[in-house]
Image 1: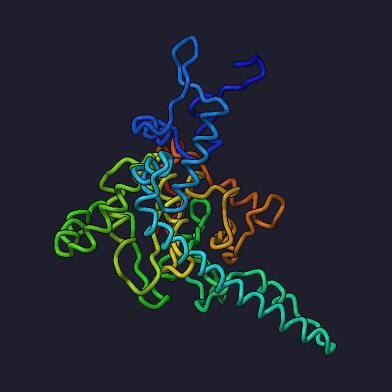
Image 2: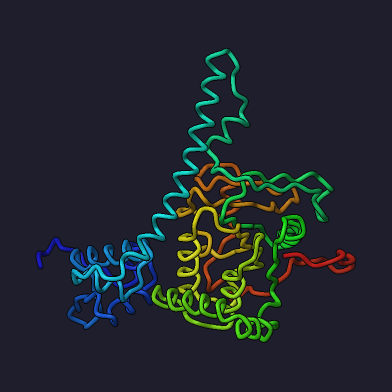
Length: 351
């Protein structure tokens, strides 16, 4: 080891690799990664360990289990076919989206050649992923009945807002309006018994949930009732969108991180998800991809709006201030907006 070689702590190595420190420990337990030890006996990760870790993360992104990753790293390609087939389906979905976008651009260029300038809306829609699903309705209280229109609904949508902003009411209205949509509320843990009964009555669903649990555990998640409830709803063969209230409820930071990584691996044509959240682990603004969108419910009860996750974009700072670490979220769980004495409560509490 040369003096210039830098070794990283487990937390810094995990951050750079985009996984949890718990996942790194699991990779070590499985013999996939062997960190060095410093003079004090603490784990440290040098260039070789980081390169090996990056390979593991990349293979996991292809859909391989840790057992399959171990085989590949040892030169054995057995079991690769199903994972590569699933990844091919994902890529083909993206190709279809690109073809639609190319057709849009071609049509706009043809119009431009004849002197017809495209509108701003047409140009913006070229950048949006192709989606036939959209929704519009009159906004409920606390808004003033303004018309809300959401086009090009993405596979993964985050709903964010401060306390009292009405985001839960927006979520409920989305679930009521979108065809076949399901709302998963904060009472899901109370209803855990019904979720367990549903799994027992549907062996295929139970198998899918068990497979997802095993996958998430390999990424550092902790199996718990809250996670099982979420997975039972996510893995159900339902035709419509799934709207989840405070998706981070009952999940530690490592589990939140593993869950979001799992959701991002879904196919582009999967059922849309709307996740209410105030966790910076669930919604990492620097990691939002093309198949994701951020919807902000402003504190002043202006109509909800999509926010581009780029520093300086309108609404970006408002979204960022709504997000907190899992530790802060745990301390403030259940807190409601303050109301001065003498002022009558609104028809229903909102978060």
